[in-house]
Length: 228
Image (cartoon, rainbow, N blue to C red):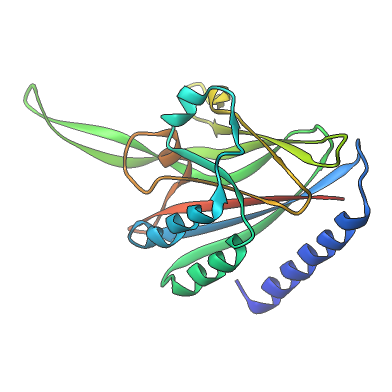
C-alpha cells in the first residue's frame, strides 16, 4: 500500500471521527471502516498478542457453547490497541494490509469480504488404515455478515455472522447463525475479529486462513462504525 493511499485513508477516518462527534441520528446511515491485516503463520504471534488489548468479555454469543468451539475470537479494542497494532506492523517482515469501506442504513445488512479460499482437512490412508491428515485449500467465498443498529443511547449494536459462499455442491451459501455474536460499541470504537493460528478444523481457521503462493497465513480484521 503506497504512502499516498495510506495518508488518504487516515484523512477519511479522521473526517469520520469528527462527523461522528456531532451527529447522532437513529435511522440514518452508518459508515463502516474495515481493516484487514494478514501475516504468515510463522509471524502470526505478533498479531495474536494484540488480543491482550481487546476486551472479549463484552461480546454476547447467541450460542456460547457453539462459539467456544468455533475457533473464532471477537472483542472490543481498548485504548492501547491502536498503538500496539502499529508496533506489530513495524515488526512484521511480510504482511498484507487493505482497508475497505461500507455504507449501510441503520438496521441493514452488509458483508465484510475476507477471502476466496478455505482450508479443509484431507485424510490419507495406507490400504484400509488411516495414515495421516493434511490440510488443503478449496475455493469458497469467505465473509462476515454485519448488521449495525443505532440504539436510543447513541451506541451502535453490531451483529456479526460468519458466511461461506459457493460452499455447497449446489453453489449455495452457508451462514453460521449459531455462531452469531452481538457487540455494542460507541461510534469510532473498534471491534477486533480473528481466528487461531492452528490447523485445527474450526470455523475460525477456515474463515481467516489464506494462502499466498506457497505461504500460509492468517488475517486479523478490525471493524469501526461511524455515523454517516
